[in-house]
Each structure stands twice: as structure tokens, then as C-alpha cells.
Amino acid sequence: MEEVRDLVAEFTRLHKLRVSLMYRELQREELTGPQLFILRELFMKEPRKLGDLAHSVQLSNSTVSGIVDRLERDGLVERKRDEQDRRIVWIGTTDFCQQMKKTKLETITKEFYEGLEMAFTPEQIATCKEVVGRLIEHLEKKLEGTE
Image 1 (tube, rainbow, N blue to C red):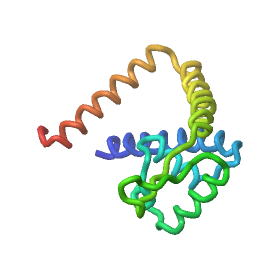
Image 2: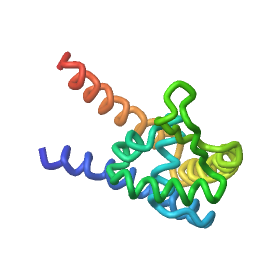
Image 3: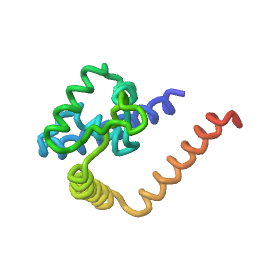
């Protein structure tokens, strides 16, 4: 039981380290952590309403509104009124932001994976992939209620 708990803790630590490395690289673009959280949410699904975005990042509407103001000022996001209901404001990324995502995130991701390929043999990578795959399969079955 203890070893399994340690394994899961290591996966959590791995994820946090990967995210921290990516954020460190992106902060060179003078983006703050909260701005990156908002952009990440928009990259996953857009456009979004402010309240939905605030709920996703677990921040207040007023805090997210301020973050969106700064991102809008910097040309990374834009607000658009809903055509059917003018009370609704949709938030989405701009073409400039999408281009930045493509160039910066793809470069950072590529460098990250290249570094891993250099640090491990193909056999080690295959073993890790197998173990992680089995863990995912187990958790998916548990989630579905089939285990």
C-alpha cells in the first residue's frame, strides 16, 4: 500500500514539475501564473463566459475579470457580446495569442520531450509507458465501475 501511495505521489510531483518548467518558460513572455491558468482554460475550450472561467480556475469573478482585462490589454484575449443575449459576454483568445501558443508552447513541449528522450533509453521509456498504461486502465475501470 505504501509503495502504491509513493508511486501516485511521484506522478503528482512529475506533473507539477512539468507544469512548473512550462510556466517558467512562458513567464519569459511576461505572463503571470494566473494569466497562464486562464489561457490554459481557454486553449482547452473557448469561448467561455467569465463565470465559467472563474469556476474552472477556482478564483472569484472579479479576480478573473481583472486578469482578463490585462490579457485583453495585451492583445491575447477578446470579449465579444452574445448576438442573441447581449448580457452574455464571451471570452476567447485572439489570433495573436493562438500564434504565440503555437510557436512558444510547441517549442517548449518539443524541447521537453527531446530532453526526456536523451535522459532515457527506448527500453526505459517503453517500460514506463507500459506501467502508466496499466495504471490508467485500472483507474478508468474504477471510474466506470467495472472493477
